[in-house]
Image (cartoon, rainbow, N blue to C red; front, top):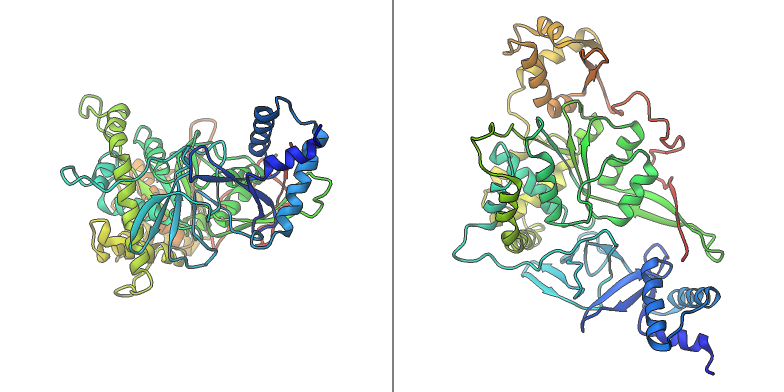
Amino acid sequence: MQNPFALYIAITNQGVPFTASDGQAFIRLPGRYAGGFYVVPVRSRAFRDWFFHQVFARHDTLPTSRAFHVVLNHLEAEASHTDGNQRLAVWRRVGCRNAALLPDNLLLDLANLECQFVEISPGGWKTTTGESVQLQTSRSMASLPAPVPPPADAPPPLETLRSCLNLPSRAAWLRCLAWLLAAFRPNGPFPVLILQGPPSSGKSFAARILRSLVDPSTSPLTPIPSSVRDLLTLARHNWILAFDHISTLSPQITDALCRLSSGLGATVRETSAHAPEPLQQFYKRPLLLTVTGRWSCPADLAERAFIVTLPPLPPDGMDSRTEDSLLTAFQPAWPAILGALCSAVSTALGRMHTRALASPMKLPSRRLANALAWAVAASPALGCTEEEMQQAFALPAEPHPMVEAVRNLLDQRRQWTGNATELLELLQPLVPCRTPKGVSQQLKKCMLTLADNGIELKFHHLHDNKRIIELREERGGASCEKSPPDAPPDFDPSPQPTETEELTTP
């Protein structure tokens, strides 16, 4: 009988082993349909399932555990010693054909059975397949529809998208578009989109739609993780991280979210006897949060955020639109909406390096400058002018009376705590509010501007239903004074890798 190891190695010859930029061993496998390829880590459940299926289909048997580990060791050795297949860039959902910091083309993985992806260049976009790119998928990733050009006899696709979202203004709509366009860039940095509003204002529905346009998932929205380790696990397996119904954040999670938007290093340990050296991995991710009425935005996060406040939906009987009816309008338009976004990305690629902002402007934060430049470059394909896009990012020309009043209050004391009635007495007649409820509403609307002025705002709900407002000068820091009991005590906010996570061997 032929040596079984030779039979098993012959099966693996269908794929091409290589190492990723962090040194991890991958293998490129042929897809179900001609021309398609997909990549998986050598030490992964996906490769094990593929290999066991191939062995049983050909030889009507299954490999022993020892034989399978011999195959894994062989593939890792081949990946590390094959010229031209070492230190290749592996992307998740969004990537490019090279590891350039400023790529001239972008790739969007459709994650379908045909292993198709969209290649976007300054000259346009096309749906294609091929083995020259390494796009990694996971079991939680859902497929995107193949984009199509907008039909000539239909409404503009992006207007169809806007009609499905309960947005208060054109500026809010342009901020959502800017966040979507930033999610098409593999290298970031990424703004954080925060959707807030009263209950039943459509925050969660809008978040599901916006995430699904770039990175649909079997679980589009998840609760905020309780530890940094769990957050990094989600980052390893998803492109967009979308968290729903957030009321508070621990200091560790706040720091990790801020770093994920601009780049976070992590140490990943493989549990292989032959891989004692840990992998050094680096994550940048677009983030989307929906928050409750008890939320107060940490100053560090506000510097990186687009905050959109959704208005309350009309009372029952005044608006017949339901989620089902909105999805009925969105579903058939999805391919054309995705095509319109790909066209906007193509426009941005063509104009990004040949233009500058028309005039200097005051941004909520310098951390949003890249997102602004990218969105302004795409503006001709978004149905807006460059000036409109810049105004969507701009701070108010005149300081808000509430912000000025709070600033004057904190000039006399660095911190104030009390209820809305007490605060109203201190701020009158400097603010237009006449009721305690109005004070609370105005503070929430000014949260981003307050944070930009170094003022931290918190709302506390006590056990006897009393609501307490806390205002303090905050020059950079987390929003919570203590962390949950299970928060990692050794998380280091420095840019060096700090977290560890195990990759289990099959």
